[in-house]
Length: 400
Ligand SMILES: [Fe+2]
Image 1 (cartoon, rainbow, N blue to C red):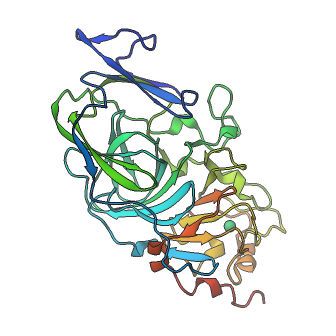
Image 2: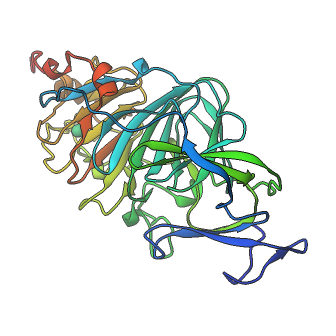
């Protein structure tokens, strides 16, 4: 989807004046000069105007594995036990990570300090709002967010998160761009008529007039896997007279994922919302398990089968505790992490219990990430909030 906001020249890279002032063009692009991009029209100055030497920002987001490598096991991570931080960026706590993917939780009641901005220089971001509300303010405009929103923030976006009260986020980062799965879109970039998502249901940035101000403004840039460097810029970074393109931050309500049901159990690819990279060859898929009707075949078993998806590591974040296969084990904000090499299955009698749900609505709400050909490992922080009993939680009686 290509959006135009504010004042942009009709022909890229041509002279453009706003109220008589010569504007400066910047391209924010992916895949080199070949992927989705936006062109930004700066009123005041290039984003390169540093007025003090770069310094360490004073916090580090590098995922750290436990000092002693834990034995292979499935995990249940209780993310409500993750410590809160002063703002959404400094609260980012990586729980699981791999070479291209990081899964974190951020819990905070604070907005970022005045005149401080964040830019992820090495990963694209997908936030999921488990609790709270606020505003993502970016060079592209403001995106108001609330519980149940996904926030897609392309790598390189300069932004800040202002919160209204306590917030609890899941955050998935990827080296590769994150967007709606390409098979949901037709050649014009519209969602197909069979897709569970509709691209026009996104919340796009509400454009604001350019902030035309000199001063000292700080951009904390995450790079090199998690180091954060502070750049000091001589003008406010939100000085755009306009922008146009396909690369911008947006929100998407998980309940705008319109579930697809069938008469027998529906496998996860039917629940896919987003994709990173070229799934299923690399990158990952993000699935939204929203309330929907269970299979209505008189012999359907609504609970999933045990599965060994040998090329995928799976993280599943439970926004509520109504997911039948894990009922009694999880609570809101639980995240399971099932490495590819260990099969997982419904807990205890969940499969038998699920028969009662045939043809009825379930009330689940969960976000799932499946990597493709990328192994993940738990971090020190993830290890600290694990439910140590989880690996043995399948030992209850299986049938009556
Ligand atoms: Fe699974």
